[in-house]
Image (tube, rainbow, N blue to C red; front, side, top):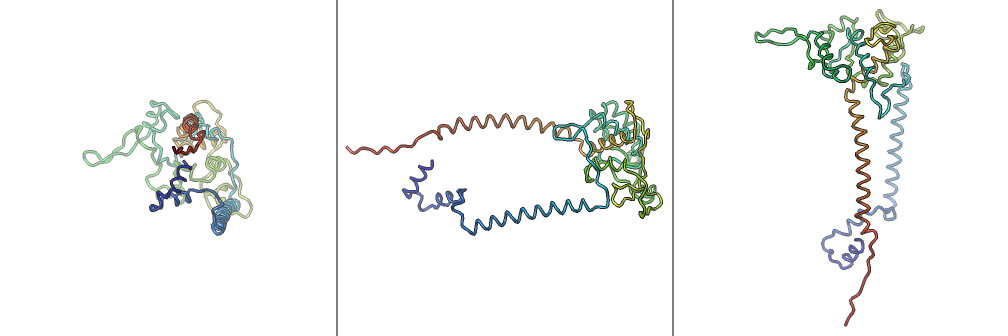
Length: 308
C-alpha cells in the first residue's frame, strides 16, 4: 500500500487535489517531524496538566484531613470488591432494624415495597409488609381522600406529613431521608457504622444544647439524634444476637442496598461483559492475524517489461 501511494505521488496523478500529501503528514506519529515550538508546547501542556491534577488531589486530601470530625475506619464489608455481592441476609436484618428503630424518624421515599421482592423477602412476604401500613390515597368519586392498605407499588411512607412537622417533633432538627444516605455521605457505609456506634461523652470545652449528643464522626460533634442502637434494641427473626455492633452493621448494609438497589445486577453484568469481551478479543485477534497475514508477508517486485 505504501509503495502504491508512493508511485501515485511520484507520477503526480493527485497533484491538483491536495489530498495525499496533507493526509500523510497529519497521520504521521513520528516525533522527528515536530518543530521545536510544538515539542515545547506539548511538554508545557503535560507539565501544567499534571501539576493541576496533583494540586486538586492534594487540596481534597487536605480538606478531608483538616475537618473537625473523626474519619471512620474502613470495615471488612462482604460486598467490597467488583465481584462481591451484598449479603442479603444482612440486608433483610437491616430492614428489620429500620422497621423497628429508624422508621419512627427517618423516611425511605425512593424505596418501594416491590424492591424487596427476591432481595430480602418473597413476593408474599413483601405484600404482607406493605399491607401493614396505611397509605393515603384518593380522591375518590366524591372527591374525598381515604386510607387503604399498602401495595407492592407503594413507596415507604414518611413518618411525618411535612418538614415543619418533622422539625417540630425533633427540637428543630430535620431527620434526613435515608434512601441515598450511603452515597451522599463521604465514607458511605463506613460513616454510617461509625456514626451509629461512636457516641461518647463530650470532651471538655465542647458545649451541647438541650437534646444534643456528642459524636466525633458528625461534623461539629454535636448531633441532634440521640444514640438509638443498644444491645437488644431490635429483634431479629432469624435468631441472630442483636448486639449494638450487629445492628449497626446490618442497617449500614441495608442502607447501602437502598442507595444502589441495582448493585448486584450491575456487578453480575460486569462479570458477563468481561467474559464476552475476552472471547470476542480472542476471535478478533485471530481474525486480524489471519486476514493481515497476506499483506504482512507479501513481497513487491518490479519486473520491467522487456523490449522486443
